[in-house]
Length: 458
Image (cartoon, rainbow, N blue to C red; front, side, top):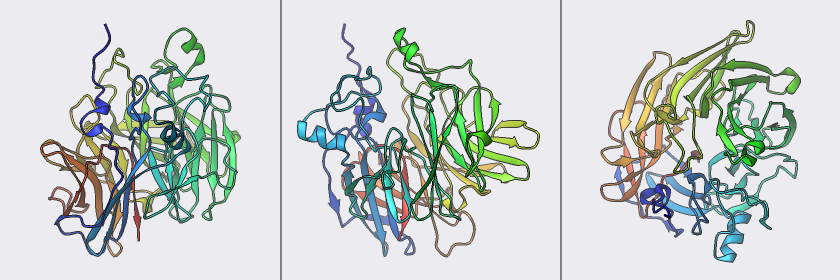
């Protein structure tokens, strides 16, 4: 009998929207802080065409939702990232590619997969890039959010480009990597503050793995060789191409920022998966990494995949890698499920006191019911709840220009109210996180749940 199961990622507020709008007159409940000036943009999957076969949340075409804020007023626009794949399907009037849950289309004349540019955003050298870890980033014009095209660093890009590059707030350098299913499985690159791709070096790991994120400190880059592996031999046996291998250890590689594979040091830890890092920094002989760790993951879940929600749930952890003794200490910082961690990005690679993590609702599908503010110096936390049947996403920190303290600023996210089916941009005072939002900007159309955002100050 054919499955009649409804895909949760094509329903409710996960479902795509099909109109691109611009709205200059948005209702504001409360008051937008006068010194909050700039643009909040969030990326996420929004399939343009009816999917072929099973649809995975990661498959959708990238769509940007942007709210520009000036003089306590706000405007909204949403635009597809017009990738080559989007244009081809747009002209065809139908989907050309299948998604992650279907067998690879080795005979697709347009290529085995499409770059959806649907995951995250980075601002570097005065340019906004929309990222997707399987290919090149896309250059986006602001504030109109139109797509300029693939960005290849003057044709110097020789690998995929991680969804989560890191920009050093002091030197202005941008670090990124690309992973693939053929050796060398990882390539690591450094870009100058002026946007010149300075170097690309191979990083040797034993087999192909999904490496979604990484971290940097002032002097080092940290790679995570975690046991979410790709195996064609496994696929030929009728097993999944991608699988979490719980009998393989996790390995963390620490490399001098401008070093190569000969200088990397690997530390072994119990098997785990990390989608997102909060930050990393150095203290004496130690490199400290803070990230959202899960015991295992079934990221490419099909209906018949067994899934242990307890193991497949991220919680904040800290690792201390001692470069002189070679030892590592791993500790859980909180039992509360959470992911999509962010900090004040003026402290990327430096010691931070505060972190902001999306608080997961008790749900089979990823819903964020609030944001947790961690005081990592004191081991305490506070929670801002979005409200009953109101769910948000990653909260992005927008620093106050004249504020005093690391947490002087605002947390910004989109929230969808399931009670009345409306979406809004919520602005929370980061120094008073348990209070009501200082402002709620009502968006004139639904904003589907998505992935990662960015604040670009004016």
